[in-house]
Length: 147
Image (cartoon, rainbow, N blue to C red; front, side, top):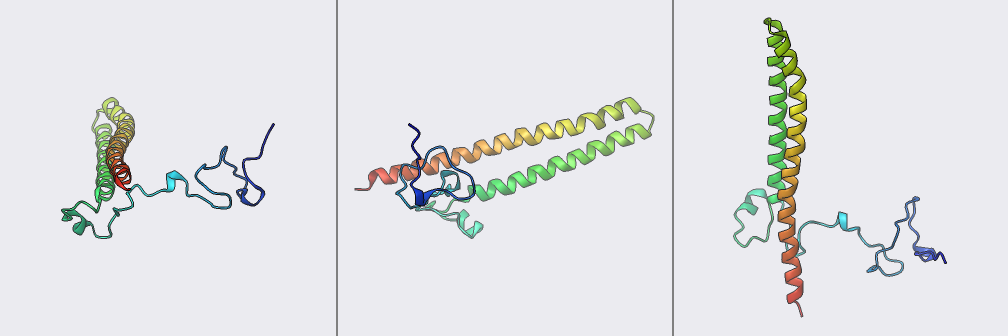
């Protein structure tokens, strides 16, 4: 028996039908997907002021996500400069009678840069996940203490 999981008035529009509806949603209500939910607990906020968040000694403002964005941007910029420098150095080696080593450097530099981008992204995502886990555990702890 193939039963439609959506009542007639709550069928999603646009052709996308998820495999199962959110069990917490009531009929007629649209619940926010978990991947759209804020990574910050309801008592915390991202804070509009980075400097003010750095001096928040009660730690109600989380600045980690902003700091990670800046650090990741600097990391990508550094890799871009290294890519440019490697290609220029390889080109200069080709022009100065070291054709084989120059071509090798020009071929390996983009590969190493791509490996650096992937590995850096993994590291930055792991750091972000650790902080999100801590934030969500704090929210769970807060909800467990509520009567």
